[in-house]
Image 1 (tube, helix red, strand yellow):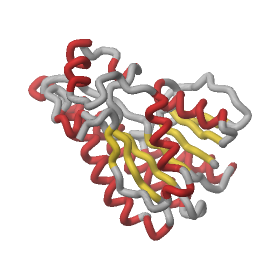
Image 2 (tube, rainbow, N blue to C red; image 1 turned 135 degrees about the horizontal axis):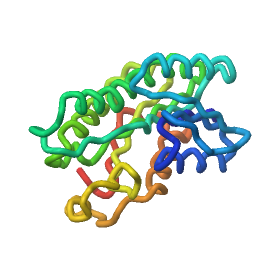
Image 3 (tube, rainbow, N blue to C red; image 1 turned 90 degrees about the vertical axis):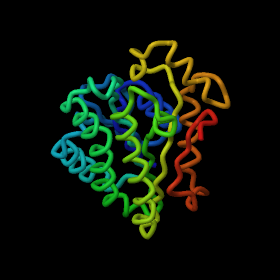
Length: 230
């Protein structure tokens, strides 16, 4: 398979890239800066997903070399954790442009290309901050709520092309995204879970594996929160 993963220079995206390269898939990655990931089956593109022109340049390069993709994993995202009254408009706009509009444009442009796969898979990322309505994460949770709606409607619109669209909502995983979050807040968040531990990157890969397997061609429009969040 040809798998495209956004925001893969580090964290979950990096783990998934290495995971699927080990399984002998072709992995295409992108981030705002260079990656040190080296593999004959890996290609890296310099892309800020909030900029449509960057996405289009990557699309042109992918079409020229490969002609198709089979799986799109929209992992790129940023967070803003602050009281709403103290959140600048520019910060809110940047979160929405990266998380929501970046995902939307990636789905649209590469969804067109994915029609050639005849068995395409799109996987988006949401967050447990959305169902838990966590104070201080309004903008981040709102951007992910928009992604959930996008996921469920795209699932219906792209079904005719045999493309499934699903989303994963991880619990806290020890990555740079939560590096600045107080441990007390993370501990309180984990208390909401049925399974009271930090998530692992392996947990994410397990759900991605399920979504992309051929037998999952009847699974679409689903939002899976990990850890027992509902």
